[in-house]
Image (cartoon, rainbow over all chains, first blue to last red; front, top):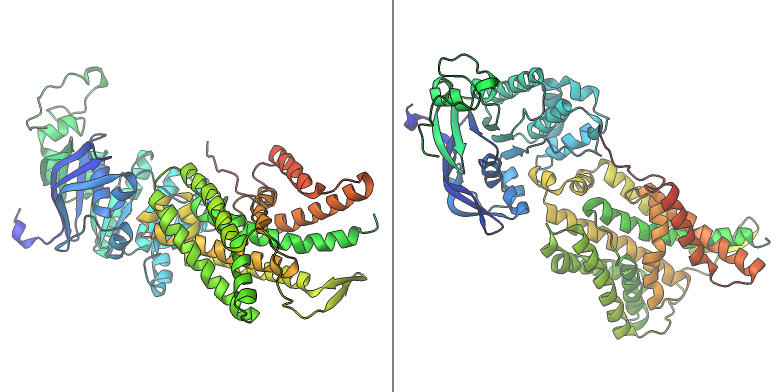
Length: 271
Length: 295
């Protein structure tokens, strides 16, 4: 990988995040996102993936989290400690974990919220764009978001992001709680959005296979730091990743639940 | 009951003041989920400030009313900045407690500056009476009613269609998610307090014009509870109708109790009895949002 020719729109450098002044969640995390590409950030529960995204989008503030070391650099400017509304205005938009749609607002009102920071002239065009990606939202545009299915809510959450015309989109577990077929559909749309709009995407996922299929670059996180990174196809081929994140045994065949505890390998990295 | 019509009409006028105060109450609740116990005191402060400008400073009424509005906005911003902003992210109950404290502070300040005796506004509107249903009615009552209606329409449109209004509703539902949309939460809070202060100020001045004012005016904040609960805590339409209904209920019950039972001051009791009944049979009110629970 020739790093020199790739433009890194986002760089996270040795980031340390502390919650409530005591709980150290990120311990010197570094990663970068290439402009126009999808970068996947993978890891188990509690690894600090969501915290990483919130540190980038400024949403840590509302949860008593604080960046104590390191930096988040977006377009060569340090943006940690910037309030979230300014960060959204600069072109970074986070789709939060668990969809977080405004349940007692209609679909269209939700989309209007997504466009909050954008000039009014863009609204109609972006709305058409969202309905183009998600025709189902158009059918339900007068419906309260709370009455929609999980998949539709996830579409709405991504739709809100599209309304904000982001340069860098942070997606936090878009596959959470969705049926496999729906995951495929939504990941397809994410890929299409990335290609058609040249939007850089940082994708946090537990579904490592789905994420690495559409990503070009991947990072694997454990206990608040990056333990492995590389091109997506390298990671997909890496025996450790196959064993611990893709559920394949060394030979590449699927593992049985019967011997799921009997790892044949030890992790070849320092966690 | 021979005075029924009279009670109803006076009740509607009183009710329009309730509607305005309830409107302020609902706006703050809608945007921030805070139940503002200082709402009545905002009404009282508005009335006294207007009194100070008109009577004590001798300004023409229109000028002093505009000054009162400006003062109310500044007061609301100050309250928001000093007392509420530091509490963002803390449990809602702490904020509610602060509003209770604030109501005591505001009341004491007003007593400090103006004492506890009744104050009279000068005649503001021409002394015209209009006949409605054969009943002579002072024009103040009609003005109060129309003003309340107008403000209600304006704010309903604001919440339904304007970007800021929708953002306020979004913030009420989920602050963090709203922040992730780029909505400035602090601005939204400040704005909701400003709007609430403005409508309260209208309410206070109307009371001043209709009758005299004293520091008990703050109690209107509590009397508005039955109205808001009846209408549904987060519904503007509910606040407007609930206010009118409670106004009428209060006056009619008071009249009836006086006439048949020889009891005085039954009106307030009636509205709170009604509050209990409403909570038992329709806890979300007539127009309030029932919590959406998907199974």
